[in-house]
Image (tube, rainbow, N blue to C red; front, top):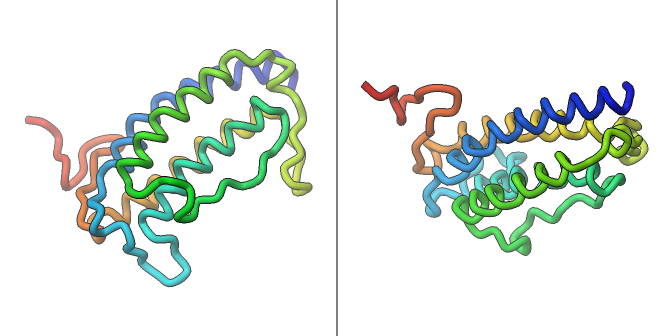
Amino acid sequence: MSAQDCKVAAGFYVGDFEGEIPVTVRVLSAVQEAGQNYKPDEKSKTGLGLARHITLEDAWLLEPAIKAEMQPLPDDSDVCGLTNGTDCAARYGETIPALLAQVKALTPEQLATEIDFFGMMKLPAVSLLGMAIRHSVHHRRQWSSYLRAMGGKVPGIYGPSADEPMPA
């Protein structure tokens, strides 16, 4: 992929991601604190753990394009300072747009910079933008499947939901 192709792809990815931010913020905001320790299986993260994962790792996947290298995984345990879905939604709503603004300012050459993904693969920085979107949508869907069991309501994502019907 040429550097110019990387810049074009980045424009598409950034626009797509910007459209997903309000949906992700709504989903992260939808849980009641009383249910945040819910987890459907012993191997699963708690609701709060999953909300932290989305909040911190979506940002973590965007940072390599800006910094030109992978950073250590963020700590999404209790020490990260995010204590509920509202905290996660607020942090997400601040962090992701700021990172996307930095991505928009990158040159084609920066977006074409090869990033070593922990020795598993090498890919142009722009590829991590697509990975970040897929990560966000995947875990947002997982989180939304927890919501009713956690005492929350499922907001509409790409249309109405049983809890947020289409307006008359």
